[in-house]
Length: 478
Image (tube, rainbow, N blue to C red; front, side):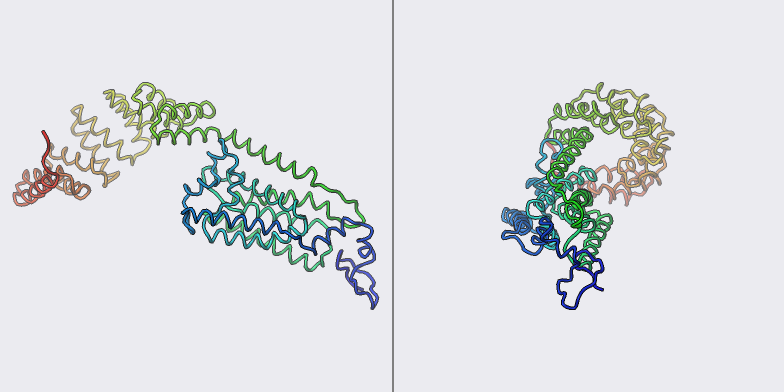
């Protein structure tokens, strides 16, 4: 008994039988020309390899980047974006072409070398099995799916590379080789499948452990490849089963699926896109455009962050009433968020609404007992309303919450001077001098505290430092 090299079944072989094929598979070439075609394609490489063209295209793009001054090992995100890298706010807004261009960009020489070495190994086999046109379609569609997957997983991350497409080719091969029927010895098929599965599992696992790897692209491309390979496996069946050609409808269907996913993401991420565009407008000083973008985002999805940002823009435009309304809306959505409360307290202080500001700051200290800034501002309000002892106790809480907060150290020293707690005042002014060694006020008040204690020599040293700092600053114009 012998095993058929094509289907793996046992058959009786004569001593002169050198074909290593059972009777059914031996007649396969004559009775099923499409299977004969598959075997011929596998053994006869094309004159011009699409896989080679893809590798060369990736290398040429990399060389063009380097020749234009891009660092060969560690290009920045800004540089990659100029060359067409994938970035959610850009891609989803009005630059969908980035889904494609990012497939030919690589983040340094090592990234390029690893991807091209992998593509060389899996691409040759895929092109031999599927043919040039189908292989190219699998590569590009998987790459586009990987780009979409990258946005799903990290919408604000800049990504580039051919790995999504490569994972798609690997996924297609795994599904087709596992479910299809080929004129390949079973042991060779088994080894090939093991290598592909180990590559996919190891690479995906490493991607989850490494934050610098865009596993969203890997997963998206791999899933697309598995779908394509599973359906196309129907085209590679045993000779006794009817054959079909799924490519005619499968590839367009995959295009529609990718496009539908892209437009769904565009709809879901619309608030995020508007928020990013608002930040860009603010960086350019365009408050009106920033406000329009934030209003568009809020119309789709109200949030604390968006209302707070809207209030910040109104504040920059000195429209205090509108800013106050925005911060109140943010607080209404989440009463425990202290950021809009801080902004609201600042507005009340600007409008001299002291009691309203005190209430907000008191709320903040209850929600966040270690908020040094809230204690500091609350102490100043208490001091301004003549509640010296309460102000002193509150300022101490500010320093306890953050000993490296210079304004709190300085003002605590002043309050202690008023209470004639000179030892404590000296200690606080000394700490303030360490935190702000170039501030003349630190040494002036340190000298005053020393004098109040009767430490004339130490006071003279502090005053000498004060005069030195004032001379270094030069004369003042009058």
